[in-house]
Image 1 (tube, helix red, strand yellow):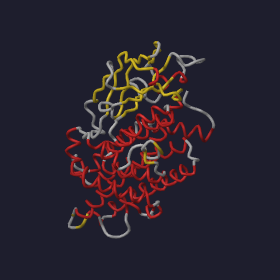
Image 2 (cartoon, rainbow, N blue to C red):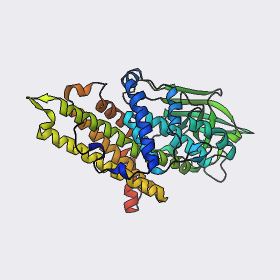
Image 3 (tube, rainbow, N blue to C red):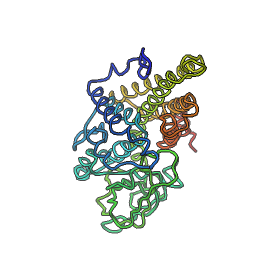
Image 4 (cartoon, rainbow, N blue to C red):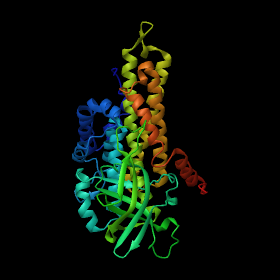
Length: 399
């Protein structure tokens, strides 16, 4: 990278981070650079995510970052965000793994589970030795999770779960699956309403639980994106999380993951700008460095602007989260805006790399493909814009 002001932190925002965030940044960045990045091309080609990475991420405090107690790290919002940033600087699959385990499943257990469930699960989940997934999305119900058809039928001291889930990270290696289903024993509700939805902790070794990787993915290849089939899985009644009642409970977990995405996509943008800038300085065109041309500098300046704006937005979200005033609509703004910014950076960087930019050993193409998944999961751009429209006008346009 050329000498001068660091384009990856043009406004010196990291200088204002708490010491814990700086320490976490350096530890995670070192692991990503020394352990993960040398393997990234092979992992992408093989559609692989080594199981030992889970324990490594546990040692890096990447799971359940802001949860306190039960062996969880209890980090501040800035430190949590920086960890997600550095993971996605390596690959979206790393950050997605941490998000599924920590932001989704662990948030569900810590917020809505019983004391016994927290004590039994959270220490191992934080360490990355007990793996989990979060089964909300279904084949026919993505943006409308309230329309789910997975059911939980009460039979004495047990529930019997039946249905399908799709696009579920970590499902093939999970020891415990957080499954959301419509229960038939939620009192005083319409069984078809979103309040009938309950969260359950399913032991994946039970008969009837089936998980398989989704083949043919051109995005998130370094990851374990799967589909789940539940064929009359019989679980004890105390496997229901006592306070996980209603769709709002599931959506509260998604907010934690979306906050991490707002930070994580910055890492993808940093990787793309770094690669594009290095290439532009090394590549000679018409006996001059590519970086010396006006059109190249314009593209790099637009990438820098997108990156810096995304950083400023994420830092503000962290400040609000630390104050305890961060709202769901503000997280929607951060998720949608920063994903869009990262996609623009990845596409512009790929363009600057020219012919070599289409090769899978280049960061820009890999991040460009991955970001298409990030733009879709945890709420599409359209859904988040409707959230913002509702926040601005007071009118809901969802129906």
